[in-house]
Amino acid sequence: MDYSDLAQHIKMELFEADTAGEYWPKICKLHDAFAGSVFLGDAQPDGRHNCLGCNFAHYTWGLLRTTEAWGVYVKSVKDTPPVQLEDFYPVSNLFHWLNTSVDAFTELCNILEVSDNRRQRLFPVFSRIRVWANFFKHPKAMILTHHAAYVLSDEAHDGEVLRESDIKKYFSNKKNDRTLFNRLTNKVDVVVVLPDLRELISQFKEASEKVISLILDNEVFREEIGEKSTFEGYYTDEEPDA
Image 1 (spheres, rainbow, N blue to C red):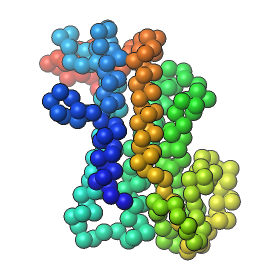
Image 2 (cartoon, one colour; image 1 turned 30 degrees about the vertical axis):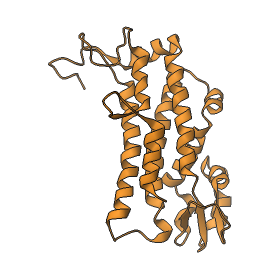
Image 3 (cartoon, rainbow, N blue to C red; image 1 turned 90 degrees about the horizontal axis):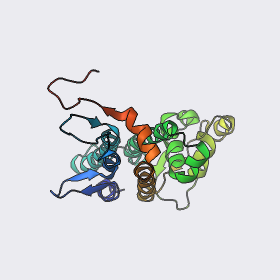
Image 4 (tube, rainbow, N blue to C red; image 1 turned 180 degrees about the horizontal axis):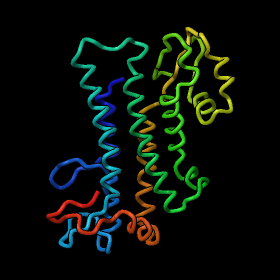
């Protein structure tokens, strides 16, 4: 996997250039939801600041910088990881940042009382990200495998192969833990087929844009979230209270 190329894809999908040619996360558009209202999205004479866009931008920068850093690493050092793990480290970190954003979006939906069914219908990629993040955070029976391989190609593989359908089955909940242990315990031929990362990022971009529209186009939602995310007197000589 060329992670420099993937970083460029992330930049093209989740970022945009301003008039000065600087790139910023598209999620910063959440600031626009409060422009011209009592909930101001940037520095203003009265010192108000809305934090929503800034916090989501932090997670997006984390995703980009982590991917960029790995791209530089593999091109600049000789001490590369074993071949079966060369995609394990960057992909696990990538899903950390994606899942952090999903957690934040989910919290936002909870505040706005968007039902679970509606959220799953509007943002199916969030569930994909969640189960992969669970896989990396909660290895379960993977700790009983011998040097499992992590690959990005879904070509024919020998051995005990885990594809995304398996990840969803075993890492969405605990119902199938025993089956998973029976499949993986003391195995030496486990192969984990990672998802198409470029496709996943593009799907995540589409979901992010829907979240932005959810706030920008709904006055009731703007009012609800604006009250909870705007700090009076932020841009003053005094530091805001912790």
